[in-house]
Length: 83
Image 1 (cartoon, rainbow, N blue to C red):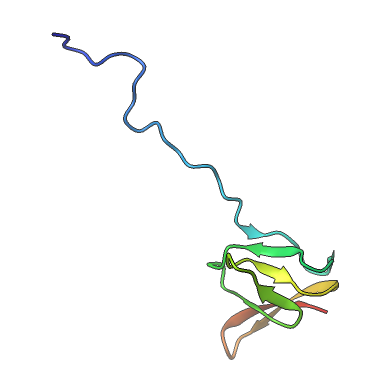
Image 2 (cartoon, rainbow, N blue to C red; image 1 turned 90 degrees about the vertical axis):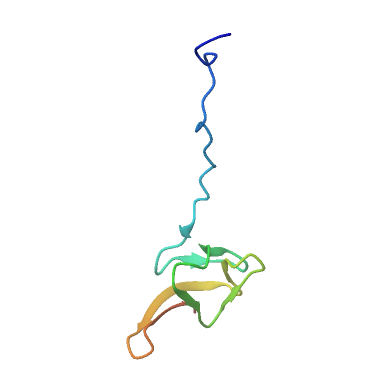
């Protein structure tokens, strides 16, 4: 019987691929219809005028225009708008 494990095996050699979540468009940039603005919904952004949630919780522009970010301190929310 062997006293050592066979070489070349490891218990924790697994790692998932990165998902590249986060902002994809910065402020005052021109976007077209259906451009992805934010990947993933855990970033605390709320869709405003001209922005909607897609099926997989990405924020997507619903019209052509310019991206703006607003912060409402009274409601404690960050909005993304396409004007």
